[in-house]
Every structure is written in structure tokens, then in C-alpha cells.
Length: 436
Image 1: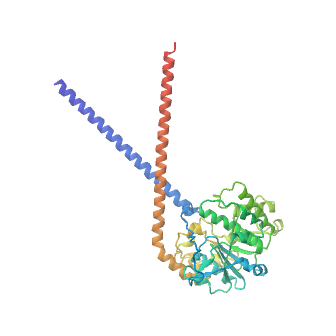
Image 2: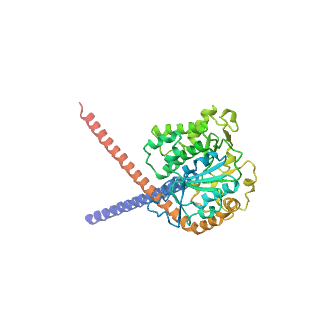
Image 3: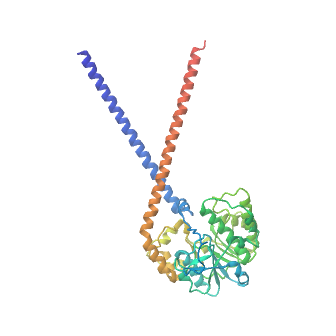
């Protein structure tokens, strides 16, 4: 009887232990589920916000594709492509022409996307008597793909090929031809090349430079030496107007070379562009904080307030793509606003919705491109949206797994440290106990 009673008590005890173990295991599973969900939520929120609110969103940097297909084997007699004239062949024309506008495509794409074509068409319509040069790194432009077909009717638009080494010739940037290029993420290589090209172009020929994501809203003839603030303490280089061989451009090229030759950080996207020009202007103007409209102190450089070239901040730019019941007269009729910067690398995955501010402006300022712009966004919207969000989810899952792995690793390391500290403490305690 005693043995049976003892066995019964033992079974009860084992049952309690098993229940306790099961409960503990369930608690641990729930705990890890909560940790995974919270981590995934934080990662997704961080990635999506950085991708939307950052000037060059963390997700867009690693997903942007430039489609640098090799054109070496292309038949020059192909009816689908036009062989472009080299910009160096227009040297005398460039120097003689008083006002010329430059757009530069530094990727090797052989076509122009409709958003960029809108910027080019707007510039051509606003400057009918001036020359618009679209410089392409590709030697060819596709005649049927992209938006070239909508721009060819403008006699003042000239598509030309450029070779960066040829562009640098005649400037201090010629030293770049002897410098081993920094190999890094492809996007940054393209971005840094743009900084060099725009500076060298304006130094050699003078004129007005627009990034391809700038939509001009007025004629720029009044600007000769002008840059625009984007923040209280820095200029942007998406819009530049300079006379030929201006000293500030020469100083900026020196600053660019200094950065490249002194342990250059390729991840610093603005070091060779906005930051370099800001530092030069601070030195030239003798100001730690740049002030607007003080040409006499800044080698005749007229620093414009941010609303002139960049009236919409990058935090607000997604609204520029969304449907709106309000018209855009406040932008178009304001005599102080000359252009819109829509931050392409932040907004390239946003569709241009019908009746959005972008669509309203495009309908007036780039009518040839407008239909293609809207049709393309309608057809691509749903598939691109799913594709983009699926990429973000997979990216977040990967980061979450890495974070969880890191948590577990840190936990094991801390346990290992505590274990060895406990052994050390035990040995020390025994030693003191055995000591006479």
C-alpha cells in the first residue's frame, strides 16, 4: 500500500513538473513570437519611412536599375536606333550661343523615361529661341522605345553623346582620367559622375543646368550666376546657372578633387555636389551661414531662397503625385517660383495620379509627353505596386531574421560570460575557504 501511494504521489509530481515545463515552453514560444512580430514591425516601419522620407531612400538605393545594356554589337544602320553626335563636335556652337540649357543622363540607358522627357519638353517650350542639350552617355537613342519620339518635333532640342573624359578636358577635372575609379554601389557611381559632369560642363561652356527631375515653370533668362538654397545652411545643385569659366566652379572642382584624393567616402552622396559647392560659397562669401541676394560679397553669385527653385520640400513631395481637388495656380502664378524638383530617386515608384499636381502641370508644360506619362502609370501601377511591396516585405523579413539571430547570439555570449564568471567566483570562494 505504501509503495502504491508513493508511486501515485510520484506520478502526480511528474505531472505537475510536465505541466510546468509545458507552460514554460508555451510562454517561451509566445515570448519569441511577440519578439519576432515587434522586430518585424519596427524594421518594416523604419525601412518604409526611410524609403519614403529620405532623399535617396535606403530601399531605392539598392533596387534602382539603370539597364546599362551593352550597345557594342548594335548595327549602326538599325532603324530602331539613332547614332548620336558627340558633344565635342558642337564645341564652337556651345561657346558662341549665349543661353543654352543642359540635361545630362549619366546612366547608359538608350531611352528617356516619360517623367524626364516632361522636364526636357517644358524647358524647350519655355525657351523656344535657345538651345536645349540632352547629353547621353549612351552613343545611341532608341527611336521607338521611351519618349524620344515625343521630343523630336522640337527643333531646339539636341540629343548628343558625351564621353566623361572628353568633358573633363580643359578643366582641372582632367586629373580624374588618371585616377582609379572608386568601385562601389552602382547608384553612387552614377550620382558622383553627375556632380563632376555638371561642374565641368558649366565651367567650359556656361549656361543653365537642370537635373532631369527638375520641371522648369518659367523662362530662366534672368539668371546668369545663380544657385538655390535647399536648406537654411546648404545649396542644392539640381539647378545651376553660371557664366563660362566662373571662379566658383573652378574652386568647386578643386574641392571635388581634394575629396577624391583624400580617402573619399563613396557613400557620401552629396560630398561632391551640394556639400562641395556649399563649402566653396561659404569661403568665397566669408559666411558660415549663406545669405540670399548678396552678389557683391559672393563673386556675383546670386544665392536664391529655396522657394525659387525648390518650392516643395522632399518630405512633402509624395503629395505632388497624388490626386488633388486643388489646382496648381499657387505654383504657376507665383512670380517667385521658377521650377519644381520632384526627387526622382525618392518618387520613382510612385504613380502619377490623374489630377495630381504633377499631372496638372504636365498637361500644360509637356503636352506631347502627357498622355504617355499618364497611360504608362495606369498600366504599370498595380503590378509595380505589388512588386515593390513584396520586395519591401522580403527585405524586412531578412533584416528581422538577422536581428533575431543577433539577439540569440548576444544572449548566448552573455550566458557564457556569466557561466565563466560564476566558475571563477566559485574557485575563488573555495580557495579562500581552504586558505589557513
